[in-house]
View 1: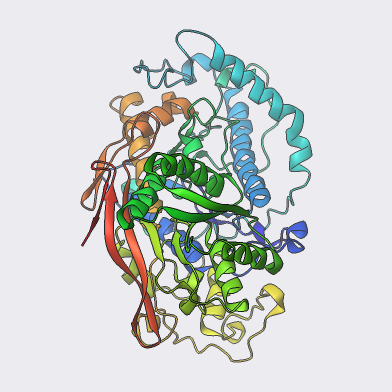
View 2: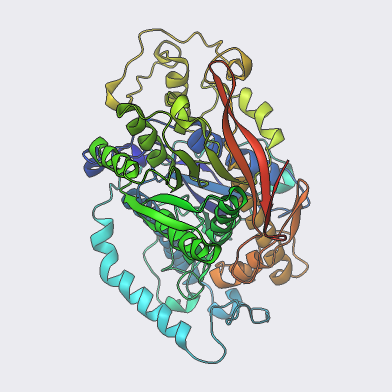
Length: 576
């Protein structure tokens, strides 16, 4: 059975979907059965728990979304496009189930009494918040074409997805103790699909009542990759890691926005770095796909304008064999004067290059300059520290989420029931089995087993100082948190605008219109930590980056050290 079927949920009246890369990418053979790899701590467990903590904080705050419980449904993309697509379709299916339930309930009430008049909003980015272009009907035609495309193909796509939802519901009973005014359910108000118009349904004709429990998905946090976006159904998405420049184009990605800066800025950072050191004859390698190819194209233009000559350029497949990486490294050797290599690569590609350097006994050859796909990730360099030594990398500025660590260190697999990946992660982290404590046998990738029994006294805090690898917070956690807060503030502002003098949900707000909600997301502005969260006309935030250097601090001990910074306000690089 595919291990992508696991879902983590916090129930709510309005539900956010979230796509995280919780497990490692499947191998080419395992991809056929959609069997992903090991559970990842930073990209997976950290992001799931940060999302849970943020939802708990919002639901315990009486000043935001009062008398409305916000929920979340988290799915695993495994950093694999096909699986990400299937999991995205599951969000759509959940929303469709809600539509069916709303259609059934609407059959016994008049449409005029339920769907009240919507407020007027200013024009944003060429269209109003309902998704209509004021000058023509281009958007209406686009929506009709998109819906027709889905209607023609969704049965074929969905037939390939395992419909075993038995595991989906077992976590629904887990809830954090919330304030009374936040946990009260407003009976009778079940939001329908967040996309489309209620006029799609003939409310005079009763429809079969949905048998699947409706989950009112109003927006999606994610995806992590620039290649996985949902655009067919007017479901707003807020990316926490997808940086491709193309996503700023609203003709194709109208319902996508993000809390991470566009690669347009990152390519400028790398160009500034090369100009600063007067590296004018270089090589470039990049991961094949939207992320790597997009960055490479922007950088190539900037390099030409800056007098930087690219001696050699090569793309690398994301799941390439060792022979491919060996060939790339050997090709780099042919250009003896181009010893600085720009690597616009995903983390797995960087690690494979470091492994190739070791296999070919080229440990000290080449100085790698990596993009944010590498950033300051310890998993990329683990075991290959010598090959990575001296490298420079670009890290998107992301402050530490200080309140997370204390929460995280207190987690325990015996009481953490709402995270279905946590026990598997715990066993791998401590190299022990929980079977004697839980009575359950966990099947790990590659049939790995642990003979030592867990005692129940293990603590994640042990990895702060006493055990290796040392604890390090996910470097993009703050973006996950900011994406969820953006959604909460957007929903809050939408409720205040539509539900006049009403605390909680009102009939006029339901079903949640994706275009109106996107308008509120785009116009959100709030303080988080010491920074202002805001968005430009393309739904992008300003750009701010750290320059990292991978150093040997003392014999045998390596780490990333920040040596500079760059921000889009000044377009200059500074070193401390």
